[in-house]
Image (cartoon, rainbow, N blue to C red):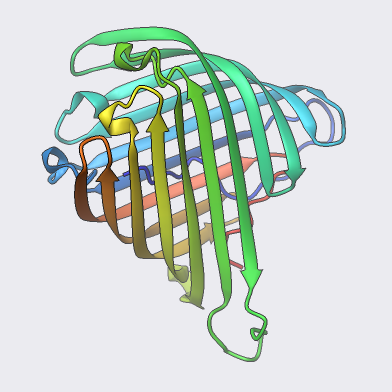
Length: 276
């Protein structure tokens, strides 16, 4: 399952002086960790932290950003691909097509530490990625009407990268992956958050036809979304997903529970799919 919360909640206020320092953090706890039989009793924790500094900006939406990033994964079954720490430093060109649609291209040096097989690998990775979000209001909804639904939030993200990773198996492959979600905010449950039901699509493909890099998944779920302050978005819920691996013609189903969190500090970017 490629469910991802890499892209965070709304921006915090930034100091007006000095270079902008955009950054983000996100994480996800999920059980079971995927539809694969080997992970049917596995609890997975994954997440990322990134901090950057814009060393150049043209004032019209394009910037050159120097960044450092850490990705982490931990699981209860001690599977090699789920016990790792990935550190990276890089440079990227970032462009805002709007406050809620951002694209970047760049390069980074990565170090991949695997803790089950005690292996370390490193190298340069080239990438291009994008993120967009939207929040479509219900035309019949107003403060006094009580009508449902409240709104139709959604998001999409994706990435193209070469090589696929620092793993020797993926050193010659190009990977494209992404995610899209369309939801319905149905009701505000006060301290618990906004009740939402949604459908989503995950996809990944590569040029070397590696089994785990050629998959499409469709899912549907219910969740509560809770915005804490103007920085931190919590989401917790249940999702049912069907994954299809076309290299092996294998289809797998899973129902999992999850808790995820995300936050973004950026002088411009806005995430539209957050609850009102």
